[in-house]
Image 1 (cartoon, one colour):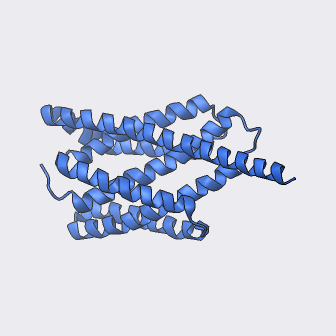
Image 2 (spheres, helix red, strand yellow):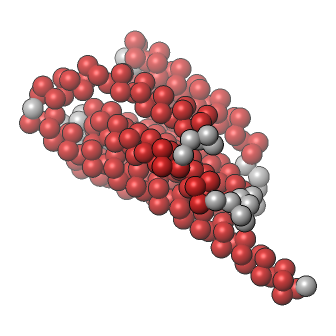
Image 3 (cartoon, one colour):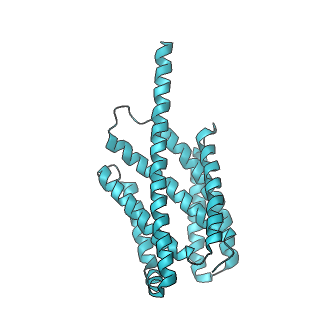
Length: 236
């Protein structure tokens, strides 16, 4: 019985690691697509002002479409095909590159690069903590969600106030919230991986990995934006 138990434990670890690896692979694909679109869009905005004006005018429309993609995937992921979920994730990543370009256009390449390094290191540390900690982070989920709602409300209010001080407060609070969400989501994904049935279809596993990738993708992008607001002081 001992060898059998050991084999089962090893198989479980392999299953979890395989799922987590798939999640991060999809997250990196999404971030890569976003980065490529954002880079070429910023280049076009600098060489062709009409492109920048068009994006500024369409910014909220694109942002609302992106939000629709997120809600649709979250609610319908189990009812749509894995290929459809993959396509939606890819399209969302591409669209997010356009909206992110509007923000990046204001900052220098040096500040963007340095902030990306800081964000990557912070995200990695939070994700590793979420993976290895023995503490159950479930209780922090509601608290972090309330913090996220607060950030959204404050950001909307600041659109009208245009207060640099309020924006800085939002950014510092946002860093704390998204670091916490990164650890929380990572631990949640680890638990999800452990409960995947051994006979689960490839499509089912891929859809789970895509939703996990979307969660971590959003954590990374928002953490990057908050850090950019703090450290990206040198602007073009």
